[in-house]
Image 1 (spheres, rainbow, N blue to C red):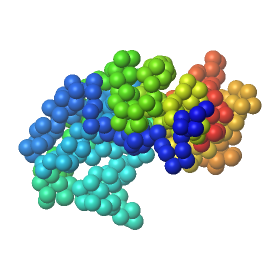
Image 2: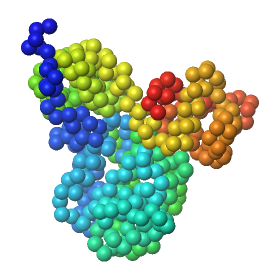
Image 3: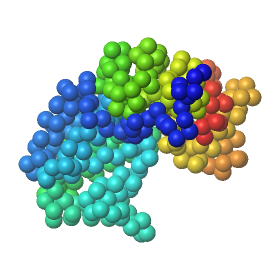
Image 4: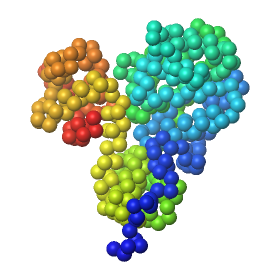
Length: 374
């Protein structure tokens, strides 16, 4: 290879590496204009001090839901309005106290004291702050399906949407973001919440192949130097992204492919760099799901993965006996953790004939990959 075609140790293919981070908000955000326009319309009353209208945003992972809300909320932060936007990642903040703490932090600039503080006391402080500052709050519960296992979604919605009854003068709107298309919120939400929720549903369909190509190409133009990724190589990444059904896979592949090229001291991404990148990028959903688990939940799925490696057919009853002994947990905690792992699509539960409520447990991913990313 000619010396001039080699990448020197102090050179890089990245013009702006931040462009390939999952939480990056692009200046130009195409193919979601209608959804963003509808959501902006629902929030408009809050700009004038009224209560924003509630919304459900629904779509499979990697269809622009989070970025759309983040972009609108960023615009709200930049203007002097009465509305305070709060986006909560429910993979991480999945209890009433932690969600209310995020709202408190946005209103006051610091978190509440954890010592001796209950969620009721934190919300009382939030309500007082809203009334004193004459502020309207809109809360986006991102990946709200993570709140359904222990009925936390109903609990937090009840507190937020009925706040005006306990604290007259408070105005709160809620955006519920759902990535699991099998979730039917009309069944999950109880009657006390349903009567005050009345959301408008905004659907985010999967991107078409041409849309994925153009979105990724925008990232390439912003993030790489010219000539790093030819269009024929980008089409390969687009095809992998389409197969995965998640734009995040494509964005991660761009980053990893370029890193592979840099490691090989090459100035252009090749088919081999892409092939190696896909081996890791196709597990983006698994990595994010595992990061959201508590220590006990990680220990439980580790038990399941090890049993699967040994070709053992696990039932919930068998697993509980092992978990009770090794993890020192009771049945209620065990059941809730298994339900959460099922809702995250990390495992599949199947009823076993003739065994009452006993169910078979099957992992949705290679157990070696689960153990690798834990």
